[in-house]
Image 1: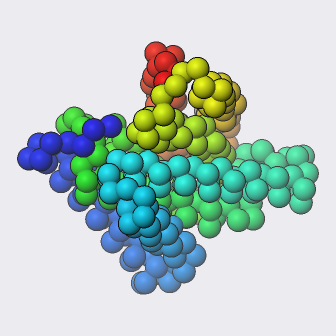
Image 2 (image 1 turned 90 degrees about the vertical axis):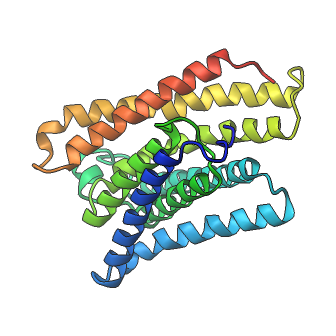
Length: 266
């Protein structure tokens, strides 16, 4: 995505910056006044990825888009490894029996799931700030900023109420596919575009496999389960917010599939 020209698209930038500041105030209020020390992992995630940004900018490149993409690749790698570890650990600890029952996904929290979600939430706040700061978006309704705002709202409300944490961890398995999306972007910006290269072909194949296995199929299955279990949800914002969030993710997946279908291996 190209950097927005100076002097343009200030209105959407101002709106999303205001929402990000409100989000930050909300998180800090919870930590300081409601003594939610477990939410410090959100701040930790933000600071970690901001530090990674500084390191890459200092030692690799000063191109804002390349730096942002490299940090996104780092987040996808860390989050994918975290989700796989959490799921495997739970399988070893308790077995698969009842692991995906409604009560386990909504009311319970797998070991390490809460801090992992906090850390990832911190990344999305960092990434929102970085894109706003360097104007790495375009249009009056930038889809990437809308996507991040939606995730911040869903993640933060779940963390505040300590519900549906496991559901959200399952949605993050899509970061396995994002590894190849970001790798392709970094490769192209580095000028590596040989379509005949075995590495490029392997990357393209793995991107499609992980798109289906780690993004498209899991999100469809999660949406179906939410609909099937809808009568079991208590009255509140959890179900509508979850369905709205999954609808947005499935729509994004459709756009990603169209992009991959029309892209060449270059």
